[in-house]
Image (tube, rainbow, N blue to C red; front, side, top):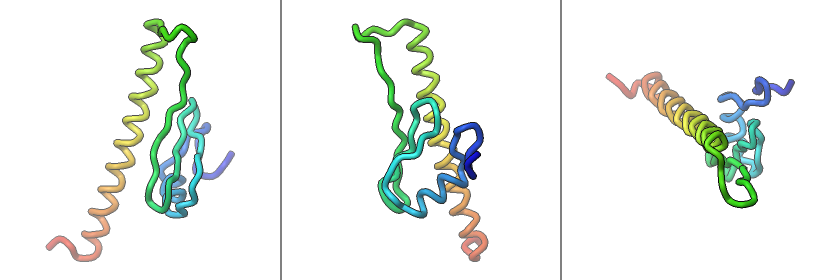
Length: 98
């Protein structure tokens, strides 16, 4: 199993390393969700999906797509919170709060 991954999912440690390296490319997170590295410290999540040929989704398919999008939103929110906490801790350790 690759370091920084559990069951095909990217972990925060691996994401931070990819962002720091800044090498453009995409890393799969499973379920057609990809982290696309744009440059140092810059990335975006991409979800690849296909809709039925007629363009219609069944209620079950719609729920599945909504669930995937919600997981993606939570992952992005978690990463943003982690970045904010890391910045606050760095400020605190550097004497930024007195």
